Image 1 (cartoon, rainbow, N blue to C red):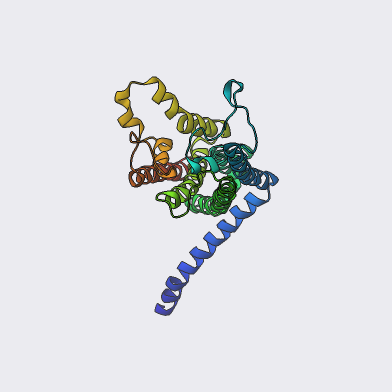
Image 2 (cartoon, rainbow, N blue to C red):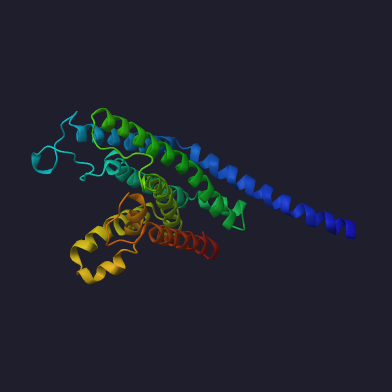
Length: 281
């Protein structure tokens, strides 16, 4: 009798791991069985690199671009920071990654497939962890490639024209590069969480793009300066502190910004866990 008990106890962790492995494999298949996944991720990579190259060429005067009002100049970076110039495409990549994350979370609710998923995994939470793991592993590869290819290609263009460059050894450059990678992946996860919480692609996109990405800029322009101390804790403002070589003094320090953004990420995933656990599908 005791031998049976021991065997059951020792086999339980392996069974749980096997079940999660199967859930993970299922979520991986779901993601890559859709042609839109490869298209969206490919577009993210292409946009980040292409806009970074065009921005660098524009900064060196190799190509002429038309900015607002018809004047010349670089319409992407808008600053003299070489790293901001070569990573100009990250601003557009953020939007695409946000869409990808929300779709990953809300798509099954629109199609009704979520009922089959939850029936197959009654515990439910393993589905969330598997979705997060698949999304993070995918976006991490895309973000690393997009950020670093854009950095090296853009830097090479700036260097060939004897323009100012963001050298690897310069203070804050490596931290900003890794910060951009973390921000892209983190926003995708927040989008996934919002998709699961709101169960709506439109609602998730509206909340993420409007509320998290655009609202802080609008609020900074419309609200009195006394609100600045609170606005710097919003996700996108916190991210500015660790995605730039030198963040404005009005924002948090790089370390503080990373902690605040991580807390927003944890809150979003925790909210998704509660929503999945307590609500009917």
